[in-house]
Length: 219
Length: 116
Image (cartoon, rainbow over all chains, first blue to last red; front, side, top):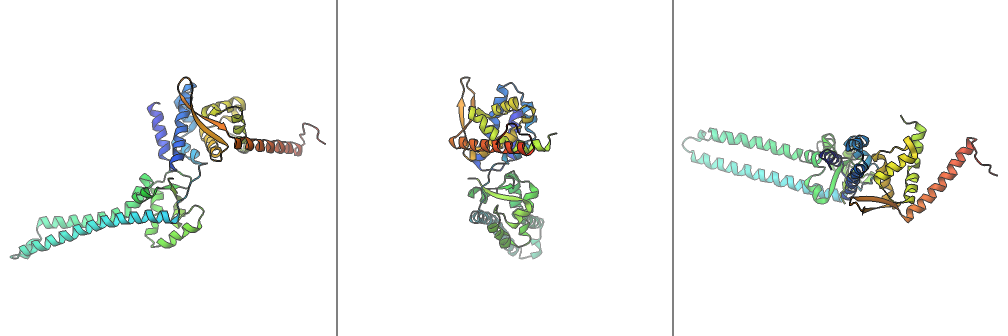
């Protein structure tokens, strides 16, 4: 199998978020198909041009695949894990700040002769670093979900619970969907948003519906 | 550019056609595509993205099953074959088709044989 075919297949699979077995079936069929075409004397390029773009093929291949939607408790468990991770990292940063504060206070006591000496270059730099670090940490907490979900289709919590975020047609999401579905954070509507889960056919939160995303089980 | 009626009819009959082919013998994906084109002409030049989803739906419903087989030459092939359940489904769809196409012909005044 030449590199072009392999790259094509990888790109098709990259677009697919499906239960593992279903994804394997698709990959096996596409690979076998190229081998069979080659054995029959058809050029790989011809096959690729007939199949269409990786996105098109991925979309068609997923069109009849049934997705198993994840329920409330599983998603809550995944979310709790993610919240815990963020809390631990934030906690570590808080400890770092406290230690920094303590060291500064101790240092200021040592500068008994001239307390204003505390404001030397080193301490100023450390302080700026601490503030920037705080901004970065907050940013990271906010970006944790959108970035991980856009790039990998899952966060650590979701990975542990065997969940994937996908578009309604089973294809991978991009940054647009990842950000849209997280806007619920900014409107402080966590429980109302989650309530939708119980009443929608595809087990979607309100903001899942807006972003046209679903959370499926990897099975 | 495909005509609308053709497209709709094709979509509706593809399951029947594929099950019927697999009733003859087990086939692998590429073989299904070439056989369809041989017998159906340009009307049935199927894309992989059209064929495989139908195979998946039928496989998930239990009408066909897949099996890897290695031919003498050593290349493993994924063969699709009809199951018992699939044979029953085929018979049902075939009967539906016979009745439906005969009714349409009758409605359009194109009766081939004289009933009654």
